[in-house]
Amino acid sequence: MKLISFEREGRASFGALEADEVIDLAGAHASTLKQALALGAIPSIPSGARYPLADVKLLPPIPDPGKILCIGVNYDDHRIETGRAKLDHPTIFTRWADTLVPHGEPMILPMASERFDYEGELAVIIGKGGRRIAEADALSHVAGYACFNDGSIRDWQNFTSQFTPGKNFPGTGGFGPWMVTADEIADPQGLTLTTRLNGATVQEASTGDMVFGVATLIAYISQFTTLSPGDIISTGTPGGVGAKREPPLWMKDGDVAEVEISGVGLLCNPIVAERA
Image 1 (tube, one colour):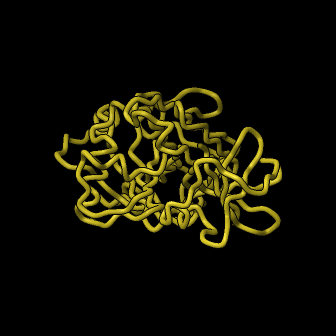
Image 2 (cartoon, rainbow, N blue to C red):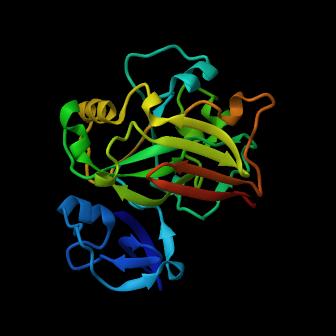
């Protein structure tokens, strides 16, 4: 099942997508997808008011996550291109919700930099929360998966050893267009991830090439923080980032960035320069 968050006639809601129709699932108990995940209130056979997809405005699949945890250098080819050493534990940084835009909306090139880079990634959305989750049980805590573009302002990212500034300019990350429920993805390490810029493929990899797989990441993260329904883990990007090309390939005003993951979907965002 594909689940979306959306706005229609000024009202935010969530629903299931069937072909070109949205089935509105909001009700008395849950008005957001995050609430519905917490309550286990996603029906196996959705019913509700139906709207044409063209009549709604997509939001990020989870507009209000409690946590957005991003994994750095989680593919060996990306680790090698960045010159980083192998690590025994995942590299983790955080994003904030206001940095994310939905499918179709512009990712914003900030006035503070011209070094705006793409990073195609698989995002994991937590359905069942928990602390100290065993790796063997970890995938049972996943509600679903989505495409993610961890747009990065490289100079700000690299001013210090901490990634946070370069990953948190408003509107720099793409997320969507929907969440595919976990029952449709037999193995999150068996997917093909492709990133395109203006139609040209710039990244392509199997999610099986992750250094730390989805189950390992959930088990590790849940040791230091309680994972909650609606939390997002973005699992890292493969090699081919713009910063490590010769010459560097930065996203610029008028470009179009796409992240496509087999079985999950296609996320597309135009790039628009911030205006004063």
